[in-house]
Every structure is written in structure tokens, then in C-alpha cells.
Image (cartoon, rainbow, N blue to C red; front, top):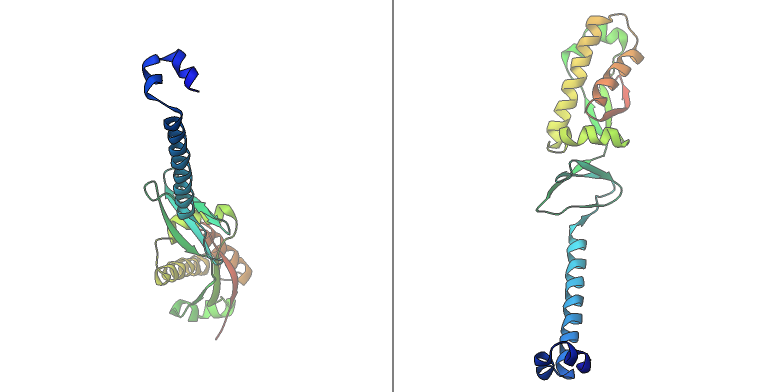
Length: 187
């Protein structure tokens, strides 16, 4: 190694001995190990996995990304992340509109089990609308949508079927990534 340096630059070769070259190599290896260890810690810290009944929603650089069941990289400088609950939401409607004669004769449901849709498209619809809302705000949003559909249904189809109402309400909820898991009428 010293002979090669002699041919390249005699001034450097006179000052650099085999011990110095070995020390530089050891320092480079040590710096590489420290750098790799630091990168490993950073990657572990930036990788987030949601709990079983949640999806993680990442926004920022690269656009919106939703992941349910698997992890996602979230770099704090570039992204913001939030959790979206996938647990069913039980809604019980006590509105006077459901106690009218047309609503009772149609047996319009007043108890609903609502879930965030499992398909990626529905998760992408639900993420911007529901991620920033509290549980009470989500419930109120769902109640408002269902009651608006009750009003529309009673005006347009006073002699309709309960199945038609469920389909209409399901379509309205699908626009924000929600689906009706179950619904029933309870007196």
C-alpha cells in the first residue's frame, strides 16, 4: 500500500505509514457501523403499525395513504399521521320523524350498526372526513345523514319498502366510506 502511494504522490507517502492507513480504515468502518445503526433506529421509529381495529392515515408528501392491517412509513418532517377507528358504531335514532305514522308503517329502522368500509376505496373516502373527528362528532354526522335520508325517503316514496330505504341510506353513507352492518326497528 505504501509503495502505491509513493508512485502517486511522494509528499503524502513520506507522512503516511501503514499504521495511519489502518487507523483510517478502522475509523471508516466504525463510522459506517454507527451510521447503519442510526439509520436502523430511525427506520424503526418512523414505521408505524395501527392496532387491529384501526387504520393509519398518512397525509403530506406523496398524498393521502391509508393502511389497515399493515404498517406504513411516517417521517415527521414530511407527513402527518392519524388513526381511523374501524370498530362498529351503534347509532340509536330517537328523532320524532321516525315516530310518525308513515315511518312506523314502513318499519323504518331506528337502530344502526355502522362500520367503515373495508375496501381500500371506502377507506380513502372515510379518511379525510372521519379521521379528524371525535367519536361524538362521527356519530352526529351519521345521524344527520340517516335522518336526511329518512326525510327524502318519506317525501319521495311514502309507500316504499324498508329494503329500498336501506339501499338509499347505504348509498349516502358510502359517499363518506361508511357501510350499514345491520339495522332494525325497535319500539
